[in-house]
Amino acid sequence: MLDWLTRLRSRTPPLAKITFIKRLIQLRRLLEELAWTEQLPALIYLLSRDDIPPRIDICRGP
Image (cartoon, rainbow, N blue to C red; front, side, top):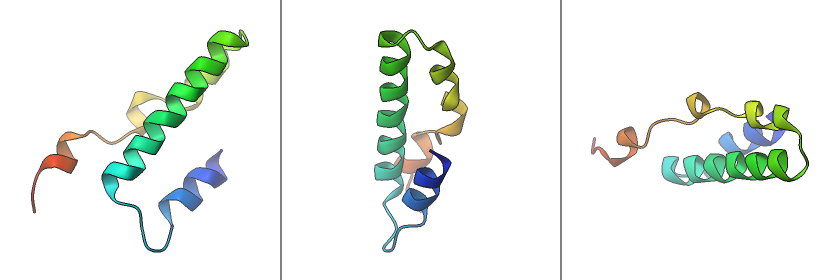
């Protein structure tokens, strides 16, 4: 998973910050769903809310 995150962040051309954050949120939701359906609670802790940048920074102009 760390490799995927690294490749996602280092794409050329780079992803827009909002796109990157949306993909992180989707991954987090996927991990939560897997944790619930497969009864593997450790999956919830692989990606926390602190790992995702706040959306406030995205909406602000330069």
